[in-house]
Image (cartoon, rainbow, N blue to C red):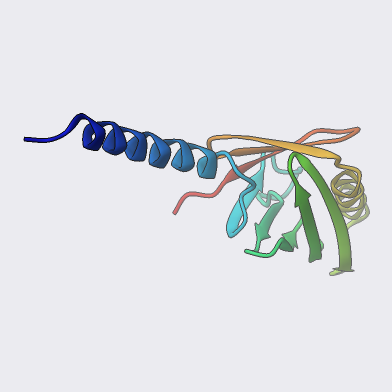
Length: 133
């Protein structure tokens, strides 16, 4: 016969695992590639994406330029520090859009995640969606 204590312990263990899984799903998406929710610019199909490493290192592929950066996260606070950005002989409009996006990333202050969408919140909010296969 199963004791009441064992049933309660099993129920608590199952509940703890489901809460931990839910928190992991809503945590900062380290180890994830994400695409900016935006429409392509005229004459291009490219949309900026970020690849966030397990330690917050970031590879950026922008409208035309590319580069690296670093996210630091503590609770719901986030800091993005851009690294070197490659110019790649971009047309002026795309180069300006890239510079604006890097500046918006550098100005983010907080973040929230709902499922596969990460919202970086600052003077301008940026929404990134986790890439599927």
